[in-house]
Length: 124
Image (cartoon, rainbow, N blue to C red; front, side, top):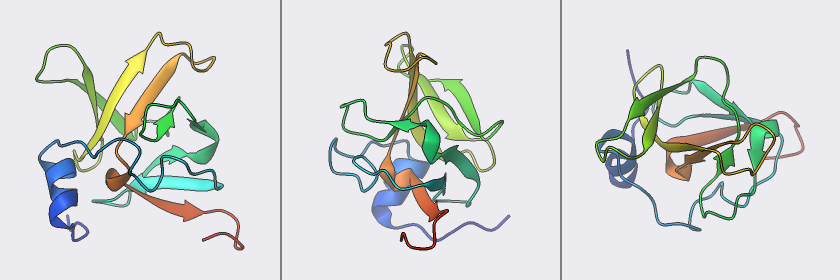
């Protein structure tokens, strides 16, 4: 399987399970209509309709595209890591029980783990 070329910072986050600084990512305050894909392998991960503003500093989603995201226990023993089901690239963490949406789930995702594809031709 071939993967997209990543920058050093993308490698730090996606392959080495790093975290970007809060409120710095391209997709934190972003509301266009489309699909968010894995930066490493282009797998469709999240529909924009599932994105919401949580105020946490990273893009937040209350659901993923079916079978696109895998949950694994984090090495810290407290959190649940989320990775791309196709390539295993680190996306961020998932939290439940916070009450932000009716689904009561928040996927907290690094912008650098994502690409975006618009549905509307007038958006870029």
